[in-house]
Length: 209
Ligand code: PRP
Ligand code: URA
Image (cartoon, rainbow, N blue to C red; front, top):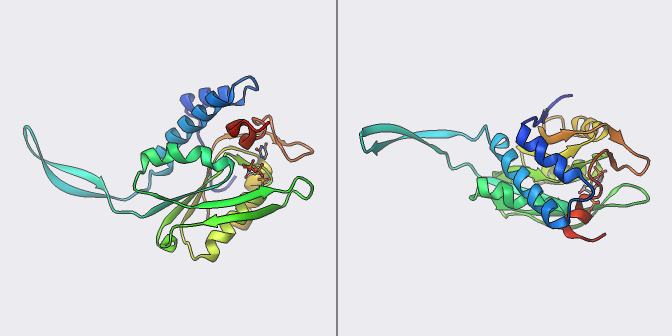
C-alpha cells in the first residue's frame, strides 16, 4: 500500500493489544491512547528540519542541533481524535491545535460536519490530522479536503488502527498525504466497524457506552 507507515515497534504493539481488550477500562484506555500517540509522534516528526549552532560543553566547543522554527498544527477530528492530542503535543509543544468536528451518520456512513476552528495562520503550517480510527476513510478524506480548501500544502494523517478500505480511499482521494498507523487490521464488518479493531474509539475514550 502506498504512503503507509505501520509502526511495528514492540512497545506500541504491546500497548495496542491492551487497548483492544474489551475489558480495559476507560481510564486505562485513555492513558494507552495518550502513550501510543506520544510514541508515534517521534517517527511522525522525523522529517522536521534541524539547524546547527555552536555551544560549549564543560570540555569545550561543540556543534549542537535544534529544530528549525517549523510551524505545525495538530488537528484532531472530534471526538475521538481529542484523545491523541496531548501525547503528540508533549513532543511538539510549539504546535497550535485546530479542531474539526465530524461524525459518521450511522445510516449513510457519510461524514457530517458540525464544528471547525483552525489557527488563523493555518495555511502557513504543516498539519497533522489525528483520528484513532480509519475505517471507510470518509471522515479522514472529508477533513483533509476541507484543509486543502484552506490552501494547506503539507498534511499528514495519523491514526491508531486502519482498515485496508480506508487506506485505499485516502490514497485515491489524497495521494499526497502520508498515513501513519499503529496497526493495519483485516477488514470492515457490515456496520463499517474495523475488525478486529477496538470497538468505538469515542465511546471507549469518553465512557459514553
Ligand atoms: C469514528 C472515528 C472516525 C470515524 C472513522 O468517529 O473516530 O472519525 O468514525 O470512520 P470512517 O473512516 O468510516 O469515516 P465517529 O463518527 O464514531 O464519531 P466520534 O469520534 O464522535 O465517536
Ligand atoms: N469508528 C470507530 O470508533 N471504530 C471503528 O471500528 C470504526 C469507526
